[in-house]
Image 1 (cartoon, rainbow, N blue to C red):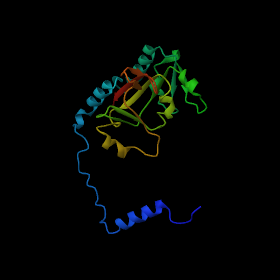
Image 2 (image 1 turned 45 degrees about the horizontal axis):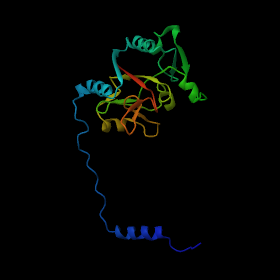
Image 3 (image 1 turned 90 degrees about the vertical axis):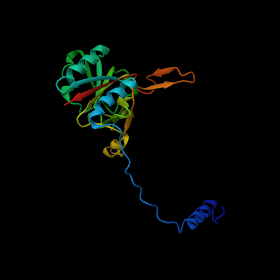
Image 4 (image 1 turned 30 degrees about the vertical axis):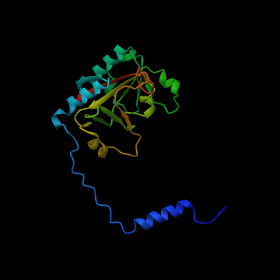
Length: 213
């Protein structure tokens, strides 16, 4: 094998020579607007864009949240609901004994998760301009796979502190070392004939509950 200078090293050497006298890269000024909507219109825009992506949107307050979750599970005919490890107990306090809670166990198989009727989670953030939910595997959200395998996902969003106007406003609030899942509506895809099929690589039905404090 030749021990001489490789083509890669020669090319890199030429590049270094070419830019040796180049000026320093100027600092980028980021004084552009990071959103185009007023703060008082963020929640309504989020609800509108979620619905545009075919998510089903509900509005309630903290006291009414358990009843809304119980109603949605009953309307779905759910008999089992998958829950993250630290989902607030009060969220499912109105479901009674008709629904069995299934804990998120690391050893659970994809087949076992697929047999669960619904999953209830919180979220990390919701982005109004794009109608996007961001999950980061927090204790009230659980691992990524529990929101991808079950066919029905109920996601709870606190409007007071979890809704931001735009992606530029969301990025600084998210931890890039966490497993971020960005959800814009239920899972869907289209073939070459533009026939839409839902539930291919995620839940077929996404219901979002916006909770006003």
